[in-house]
Length: 451
Image 1 (tube, rainbow, N blue to C red):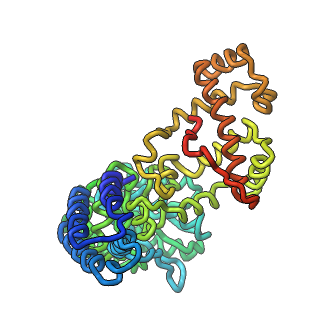
Image 2: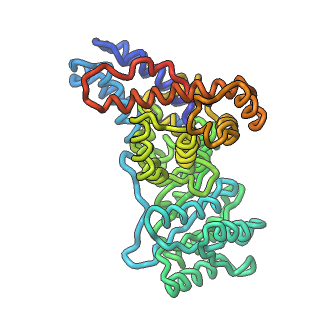
Image 3: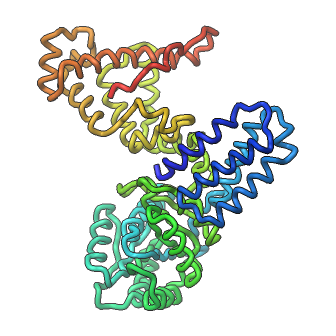
């Protein structure tokens, strides 16, 4: 996650104050010093940090917090609320024109991921909002930009309007909007040219495209990995074009997260989307409250539920739950479950969304695709009978499975044992809702994932 370092620092600082029954002014000042350092290290704009610290300190030292029964938790609540406000408060949605088509102009520097983001946004609009977008190739300068957009359009089975690289972007935008009206597209996404640096020629051209296209939305695509530079770029583009929203790309990378926290405060332009990976479906609406919650180690349960609703078959999930209760859960079910979880995205990312699952709590898990591949190989090397009833697994069967999956007998033994542990754990977890009043779930803390 982009905020790994910041999250770890802040969570460590907040843990010290969380359980305190009494919080003094010295405690708050000490904590604010730590928070200030953590934010500056994360490349958050220094003016933003100053303003944030002043605001938190004022509220944290207020009567309501100091005299409450749980002052430590109240201070954390203040930090969470202020961090949410800093990133925009509420989610800012994409514009919808009163009369179709809605025109969206995508702008930004070269290398920020503008063309890919244009395609990702089109995919999001179709999948989540049932829209019919048209992509427009108006970047006539960068070699292969038009080809790249056409390839992405083909991948998505979505129309791409292009007049080649010899026609001006202004003319391309004009004709594209006419074509979109004829073909009844409700969104037009114009992929404009970028430069390696902001220059007058680029801005003049973008202003001309804006004048002819009259966009309902101007989305600036910035690379979160460039930190404070991303904020400076946002400021420059906003001054010239009145940007209506920002899309942060590479927010899944090993970045310090400063751009996400600073960009709204500095430019007063909302972050509307965040690119969370390279795949075409890894663009998410930006929720300031959920992001603040994740940074502070409180999880992001709402996003987790949304991912599950999108990617998990409800019928199969019910069937699976029934099997868990009756202990009929087999290795075939396990493979199916693994596939459904995989569809939700990288496991590390999912674990990050779970409350309390900060990096310290995840160190034992070390989940990656290679390990999952290993588990899959072992299961797929089993016969149908072995998958249904692992208890028949004798030494020679285990040897055969290890050889067939390119793993060791120890790997096979470990998986079989942990599969049994997992079945027991599932039985306990489903039992927790049975209402029999028995104390359940004992011993779950020591359970490790079977990969």
